[in-house]
Image 1 (spheres, one colour):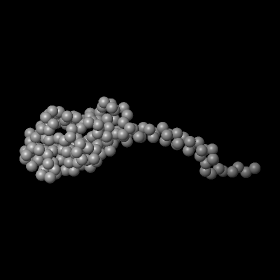
Image 2: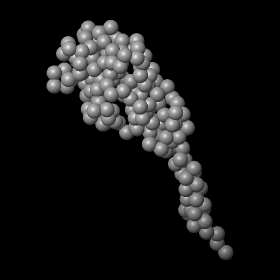
Image 3: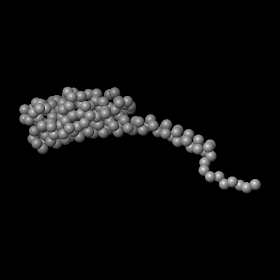
Image 4: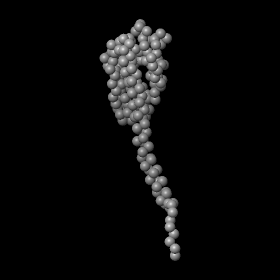
Length: 165
């Protein structure tokens, strides 16, 4: 009797390998979804933070008020822009000069002021007291929500908070 040399995989070996790969993939998908939600919330909140930091920097550099205003009334999710005030200390998109445009974001904004104004010294002019933005990804879980706090001094800080708070 001659001995045959086997080449390749048996059907059983192939089925077991596919089953193991499927189980590992199923265990990894929920973790990947949470990671993607968290990354989206982080990116959106950092974009908003950078626009406020830009406004403060421009206000100090130019010695003028700078406005940060959403494109559609108070809908920050649809995008916003940074504007150079024309000197009258009131926002008017037809008279003020747009410095930078920011596109729509995916995160849900729960709380936000209608618009912001940074005075020439870098402090918050409108509103006259500190204010907060609250952003979260859709399907928020655990501490994926972000809170952006703008102090009266104009300094902005970002923190993670529990969803729904």
